[in-house]
Length: 462
Image (cartoon, rainbow, N blue to C red; front, top):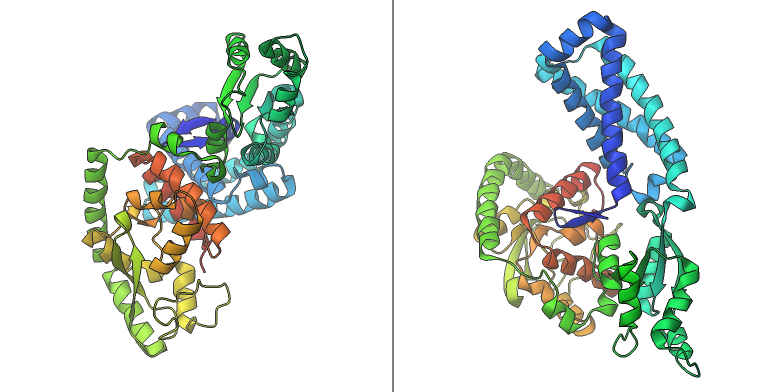
């Protein structure tokens, strides 16, 4: 895994993206030579901004491939689905570039070059995907990993690593804690030697320590000896965080929260987040004001009731604030503090409300909350007080969500989606704690980029 923007990305997936960007560029360079010949092609590339045009085209391809989930682990190994989505990418890129060339003709690459390059890219990318998967799925190219420990964290790691072949990790065995203890009884060998004898047949390149209780059970000397031989020793919680983008709630300990790196919001970061929130909320309100006026008029004509829906939410340090949204449900749909989460087919939605929620335009009034300082653009999503109190009582470490201001979007929203049950909110907390631990400008920008993908594709709305 490679860490970028304070988030983790599979090394193989990053390599695949970079290699495909290079292949797209090479395909269009080859198309330029095929169309113009060996004399005119170098002149076009060097003196008519040919390389810049191809760079823009390659970037458009990779962004569209990302937006169509061609780097997602669920799609990665399904070649028929990859082929269908690649066709969608080709169509989307063609439409987007046609619009760009119409708006700014000097960037146009040329119809002949573009058509030759488009066909070449389709063939090359499919062949490269097949070759890449054939190579990376070979066992000898996967890192051999042993899970040391049992319990919820170890089982979660076994499931996650087994379902993610693009990580290049092969679990060759699991050494459970009670097996390690049994070996210590009735043997003349030292515990460290016993552990080394047990690990040796696996030929492990990495040992992931995922024990529930390490005190008195961790063979420190043996692990140090293995580390000196080049075997990587990794904490199970650290690997779980890198693989899933969330923290393991079941294995969290107060001491780990206290002493682990992260969970620190510096004053410069606070200043940046507040200044950027004020600036972009003012820009957003200025640009969206005509649209918001039309939405307000449409709500008034569509159904009786107020245009703006006001609701109490829990913010920084547990303080209550009023959240603003466009009303999407019939008036008085929820009485008092008894707020029922929305369902996909909810009878409380108005006709216009369904459209507003699907396009997320009902969230536009939250720009006022951001401008007023109740929220940032990025942060944990705020809940109503009764829902927060229930989660606080039943989910450990839930109060940690309140150490930063809530946001209109967040790490949990772009990874988890809508939450309706207690289990949903427990997993949501795991993502929120990852964000709070790794909070940074880079991570905020990554979340905003992922949010744009969700908004454009209309995912997760309810």
